[in-house]
Length: 275
Ligand code: PAF
Image (cartoon, rainbow, N blue to C red; front, side, top):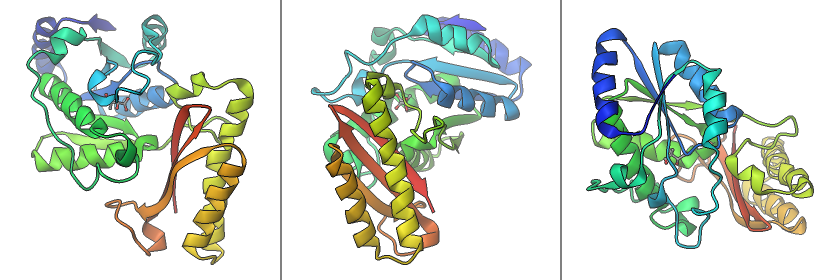
């Protein structure tokens, strides 16, 4: 596996590789890789003969009160994990070089104003700005994102379509612990008892889905879900049912996705469940 930090070196290397390989995939990450990320790499290797991963903790997508400085940076471990995968090129840019003269972009106003966008102002603008920069550098045929960040996935798909970018965006199902807890880099902020408690988010999503399919009213089932989380000391940011196609409100159960963000002891976790 090649590890590159310098942008000129990346460009040179990719121009050679492009002649050698037919299908380039890019898996953008912020590092602290877990099985969810490794699954993206594996999926990429199924359709691509040159799999690239980027590791960059993107300051543009963190608010002033958020965890940019404490976000786990574990490059040595990340490299070790990637060495055992099909990843052929790892890009670890220098922040100053990557962000120099970066062209900023905005996320879709509707998609970025709901759910996480209500409290994380400008977060998704930061995401599309950096993802666009990575697409410019790599010009990948396909790119992979986890469905745990479902809103992010929808925003990136919309951005790619609006900008007519020639890249296929693939969403890959969430990787979970045996307990059901969605794998996330932020899980490592949790103490053992908090991690046990955090499993309640997915359990609640499953219970809300069951109640709704057993014909309870959607609002009632969701309110009961919020109550359960709050009784267990979560601060619930949102628990909502929306259309999995466009994240609008929808009464079509078959198209429904439940999405939740909740904070436990200052650690904000998100998860979702499709019907
Ligand atoms: O999902 C993430 O890890 C980040 O938001 C991404 C897509 C790598 C952009 O920084």
